[in-house]
Image (cartoon, rainbow, N blue to C red):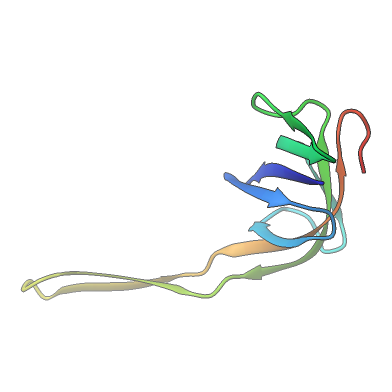
Length: 108
């Protein structure tokens, strides 16, 4: 069984007991989070595709931790003009564990 969910402007293919990093969520570690923007659910060969979301489907996840990704260096310059700028960026993320994928007809 798997599902495709959307959070933080990105889509993720998730399965039960999978750990993934998503854009930062406003939830404390240990909390449960429900994602109801489910675009597709596949369960034992039965595929439900939403338009745009599958009605009644949701994915329940447990928040494990928050963190910040490694630094990305952004360097820009203009040749022969003595113009240089160096910036760094660290993206915040939330690590979640998928506990359950529920469809409108039940599911696990």
